[in-house]
Amino acid sequence: MSFANLVVLVTGAAQGIGRGIAEAYALRGAAVILADLQPSAGEQSAEAIRQAGGQAVFIPCDVRRERDISAMVENIGRTYGRIDIVINNAGVSRFKPFFELTADEWDDVLNTNARSCFLVTREAAKWMKKQGGGSIVNISSTRSLMSEPNSEAYAASKGAIVSLSHAMAVSLGSEGIRVNCISPGWIETGSYDELRETDHAQHPAGRVGQPEDIARACLYLTHPDNSFVTGAHMVVDGGMTRKMIYEE
Image (cartoon, rainbow, N blue to C red; front, side, top):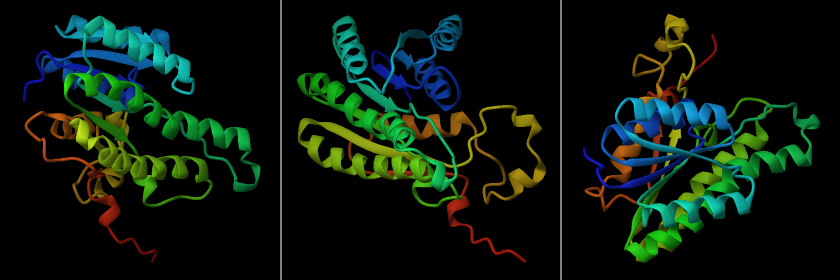
């Protein structure tokens, strides 16, 4: 699955799932732009991709700031002449007791996670429209479908991303721009070897997920051959949201 000569923007790419996605595209020939709020980690991730033979640059960006997003996308468009794929992965989580969560904390989570998907897509779509199309993937979460206590802001932001994705797919379809959404489940970005057997066993797939599992889903959704796939919500969770669990 080649992405040679395509320009790919991945937000929240300094580490974790975002870095894994960026590496996957670079491995397949794309020119990858890693955007993140962490300059040191972002530069290190881009350098690691270059050392492995890929094309990668890092651009610092605070996705809570409309000006940062507009400047970043304009920079990419003018540098490369096009933007083919955007992966809106940037996000934060904040779990606080319901009665202690402040409005400012709520706004910060919603602005970082959901509002940024709209703003980055809006700006990138201006370039995609001129070039005749493109592909967007928004990273949500299975917490858009189910919850633990004290996760209101995060759950609301991830649910918003799912709805926003199909709305943008309909609005942008006439411009040749496809928009899809992925909801990851448990994706281990730390030490995979430290997971317990019980952690793996609770997944119908038999294991906890890894960043490359989400990267492969992105590759499928954004490949030019898959032009009929838009407005989709793909749950990548090893089957966990389909498993009925009863306490004994």
